[in-house]
Length: 196
Image 1 (cartoon, rainbow, N blue to C red):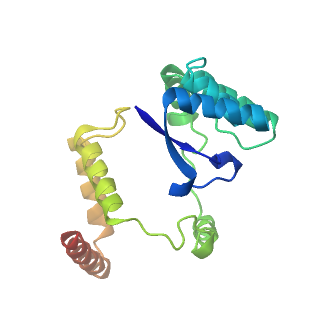
Image 2 (tube, rainbow, N blue to C red):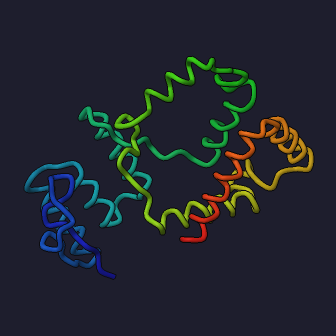
């Protein structure tokens, strides 16, 4: 099996340009990072060398990278959490334990949040999803709706929930102007969906 190795590592400013990539075996890749570590004394090369040579597991290398990043004052990724730890964190924020439980923002607050994230302040400003990404997102939403998520939080609506949604929609669209706007929006959405 061949690995792609960055001659000048990305953590040292190297790019993914083909002129900066060479194919190496796993053993050669480990040796290349050992040599780089001995030359430049960079912790990233040390961790890559130890991981590729089998002296360190992926979990150990993730934790080592996190510790090094914190020690150097960088923004290192958080150490990986076990499945049970993730589940405990999720349960700790359910229902009334959630700090946002029962909170209702005023119209003024909503307007402020909307303006704060508008235009160039929005992290997605000037970006567009590719058609492949749009299809992927759409398929994932359909899959979650039909089968539920991995955590089991989402799935097909119960009859009781469907009835609540129906009642809410009736109340929302009792205004004929809103109803017509919604109808037009759905027609536009269906046209765009067919174009994909």
